[in-house]
Image 1 (tube, rainbow, N blue to C red):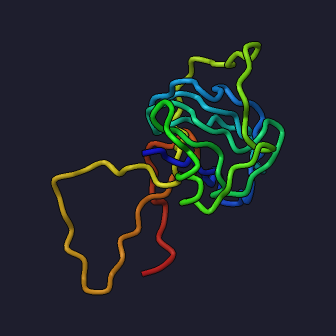
Image 2: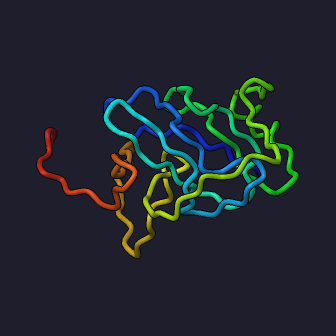
Length: 161
C-alpha cells in the first residue's frame, strides 16, 4: 500500500518548510535512510530521509515551493501502484501542477549521507521488554523528534508534577 510522506515538524517553531532540492525523482527506488530532499525551515536547512521502502510514485511539492507542517510531500509505494488512492485518503487531490514529472534528461542529485529525518512525524518506537501499567485515563507521552538527526533526548527538568 502506498504511503504518504508528510512535512515533519523539524523545530518547535516551524510552521512550514521550503523544498530546497529533491534528491530523488518519480520512479526512483527508495529505502529507509535514503535522502529524499533538503528542507529549509525557519531555523536551518535539514535533510529529509525516507522511512519507507519502495518506489517514489509522486512528488507533491516542487523545488523552491513551501508546504505547511503535516502537508503532503510525496508518496512511496510499489512500482506501478496507483498513488491517487493514498492521496485521497490523505485529503489531497493530485494535480498536474504539483506532480513532479520525470523526463529522460532528469537525474537524481543523490548524496550518500546518513541522518535520521523521518518520512512520518512519528517514527516507530523501539520496543523494550518493560511495559508500564498506566492508571485509568492516563495517556502515554513519547519523546518527540526535535531535529532530523536526533536519536535520543535528555530531560533537563520537569515543568509539571
